[in-house]
Amino acid sequence: MITDHVNCTSQLFIQRTRRSTNLPLLSKNINKLLKALDDTELNHQKLAEIIMKFPEISARLVYLANSAWISSAKPVTSVDRACFILGHSIVKSVSLGMSISSCFDTRKCPGFKVDRFWTTSLLVSKGAGLLASRISHKVECNDFEQTSQSAGLLHNIGLLWLADQLPKETNKALRESQTDSGLTVNKALIKHTGTDYCEVGSLLCCQMKFPDVLNTAIRFQRDNHYRQSFWEVAVLVGTAANMVTALHNKCEDVSENTRLNQLGIDCCEQNAVYRQLVDSFEKTQELVKIMSGSR
Image (cartoon, rainbow, N blue to C red; front, side, top):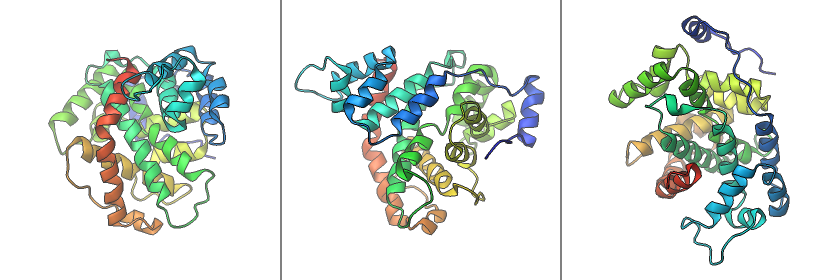
C-alpha cells in the first residue's frame, strides 16, 4: 500500500505555502464513477443508468452525440442512445473530465489553458492504452489496457489543484516553461511552487482512495529509474505524455523510450502509436471544445 509520498520536494512545498498538504475534499462520486466506468462489461443501458445520476454530464453527452463531431443521422434524445453512439471510451473520458474539472477553479491562473489541458489528458490516455495493447507478455494488473488509459487520463490531475490553490506561482511556472524550450512544466513548477503535478496528483489519489496502480503511475510517470510495483503502467503513461508533448511541439518523430523494449515495444511500434496520436490530434481538440462548452 502506498501511503507516504512526502519527500524533500513536499517539505519545500509545505514551507512555501505555509499550510498543510491536506487537499480540499473532492466529490466522493468521482471514485464511484471511476470504478463504474472501469467496468468494460457494462452495456450502454447500464452505463446510461450510472451517468444519469450526474445531470450535467448527461446533458453534455447528449449534446456531444448531436454535434457535428459525431454527425448522427437522427437526433439523439436520451442518455442511453448517447452512450451507445459515443462508445465506452468517449463516455468515460468526458464523464471523468467533467466530474474532476468541477472540483477546481483554474480561472485564477491565466497561464492554465483548459482546452490544452484536456486535449493532452485525452491523448495521453489514448497513447497509454495503445502502448498497453502492444505489450508482448502478460502484466500482473487487472484490465491492464483500461487501467493504463485511466492513468493517462488522470496523469496531470495535480496541475488542476496547483492552478486552483497556487494560481500565481503556477502561472509563473507555466509562462516560463512556454518561453524556455529547455524547461519542462514540472521543473518550472518545482522552481515556483516547490512541487510538481506528479506529486500533487499522487496526494489527490491518496485522498480519493484510488487504486494503488493509478497512484503509482501518476507519481512515477517521469521517473526513469522506478522499477517497483506497477512500473509498467508508469512507463507507459510517461512515454505517452512525452509523445503528446512532441505532438504539441509539432515534431515529426518522437524519441524512442528504450525501457519499452523490455515490454516488447520496439522503436517501430512506438512510432506507430505516435502516428495514431498525430491522426487523432485535431479531432481530439474538437472534442475538448465541445466538452468544455467553448463552441
